Image (cartoon, rainbow over all chains, first blue to last red):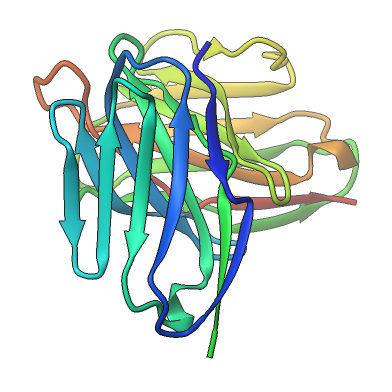
Length: 112
Length: 118
């Protein structure tokens, strides 16, 4: 069974810092990997989707990379802002099931 | 991207009552929808896969008689929590798969429903 882990579980940084969130998965037979943002008590906002054939995706200050063979992905946030404070979830979809496996999440706090 | 809505966004009920949560795909037809549950400060756990016109597929450990799923149309799936108890209090999120002809279709998530059982 696919297991997705995110490190660290929580992260607090001063505004303006660049930061990296990590995601690892146990089964490399994935179709794609997606990063989401979740604000407290809210649903999911899709940030970036990386297909298994891709190495990275970029959107504004966000850059996500994927190393499928090693079962790892990183989300890089440049020049962090207080509005970036949220929980970040990574999720993988397998080749066969159309099922999402979610990571445990990283709670990010950006201090003004 | 495609839009998925959920109703209600928040519900409070008494123990022993049943609660229905709706998940709608607003601008596409979804033959498959998924229901997730999220406990406080935990990640999302798949509860069941809802297939239009057929029975839902439940994940191991999820009581199908407790969580009734109906997917009567291509744009609507409902989750009914029967005889709700305080331990059913949680955040329930649905997602809908938009058919694209690809090996794996993109999924879009609803905004979630916060259920509190007193």
